[in-house]
Length: 213
Image (cartoon, rainbow, N blue to C red; front, side, top):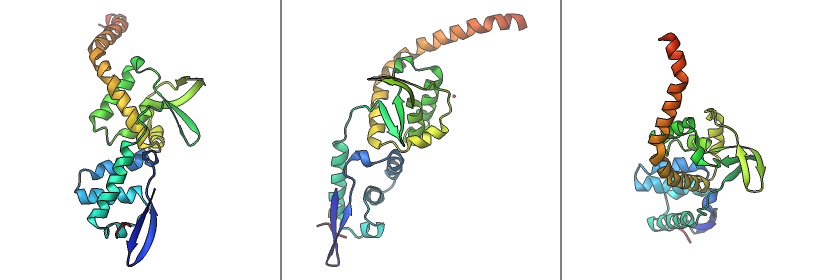
């Protein structure tokens, strides 16, 4: 998408993102952070991040023009594809969304709980690194991903290259199913505790996570 800015009698053309898919997770995190500031600062940083208009020129735009640009960006976000991308590609490598959240492990859930509890908007790369892992095998619509080992530091950096659209859809899907998981969690933990105690019992007996135109 292009916008034309008129300054000092001259018209210059600048690029604005054409799809919400153009916004990376890394860029989206920065935009979220500016929502805690003033509305003027949020608008300035949003336009700067999602267009190639120089910051100096952004500050000289009329409020009416700023509103027009912000409305265009809002429309793009509202038009985004809301379907979950089960397999995404980053730098030529495929990552698959957890194939079956009903089979999520205690380790995965504990780490998700930790990152979500610490303020999920600041931990989105880590959350995505838990939900998306390298595809190890794929046939038609069926695929398997690497087992979870808790080592997500490098993968979290890769996840910053995901599109904000993909992240929002993944979160929407996870939280929808998460409500069901939370309902069964108490009985799940009880069963795991019983299994752990059974395994430990023998050992215990022996020893007693400008202007537009």
